[in-house]
Image 1 (cartoon, rainbow, N blue to C red):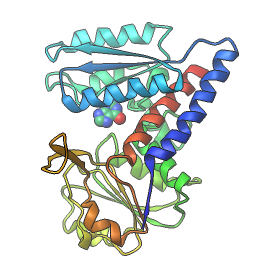
Image 2 (cartoon, protein in one colour):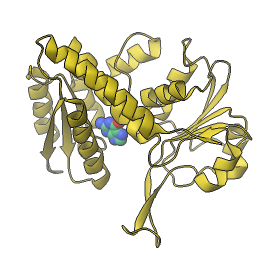
Image 3 (tube, rainbow, N blue to C red):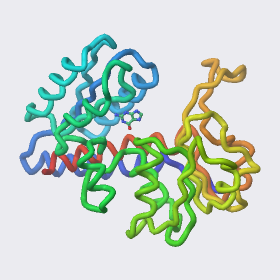
Length: 289
Ligand code: GUN
């Protein structure tokens, strides 16, 4: 069993991105600038945005985190979006999800200028991605494709089973893996919460991508011997053996599943770091335009 080291691969990509930023600045362009809109005080969102800000610093990009209380109205948030769309210093920005329940996510995401939509969540960019046209690809799916390619996982002709159909991960990664393109060309099955007997599908997977949002959902009996497993989940679990009193676990029961795999991503240090570098890559693309 090989560990797919997302942290190491993301480190290499960060060096490439830092070189890209240097080239841009040496050519007299401004420093690429990513902004992140954070609404409310969701602990996980705080952590993600802090990681994104730190990663920007590491590659020489500028970043701004814009924080608003959970009581912000939809109209007020739309004004924030309009300001960012009109701010020439901001090359790209993201609206960290989830948003409070009283704010309609689609309404906010549709207001983002597609040219600054480095999360790739605007319907225009989702449409372009689905058609195989150049677009900002959503960060986690793009990170997974990059991770498999750089680890040397052959995808053409393989059966890729995706578990989870979210707009952020499951649905777009199913689209990317099935495209007629290098690093893709898989036969894809998309399983979700209403799939009966999920195990009968996951057992067929040469490549199993799990983004169901449920800790240790995938157990050893659900995985074919020799499969490649990509775990997108990240959950905090109380632990008596760590100093912090908790540990991070994924959607895959790693200890039981790993011995069956030819390769598997760890949590943490697998998909997470790749998501962040994908976002930075989109920001560099935006700055180059
Ligand atoms: N929430 C969970 N993942 C993401 C992501 O990739 N982008 C944004 N904006 N919010 C998220």
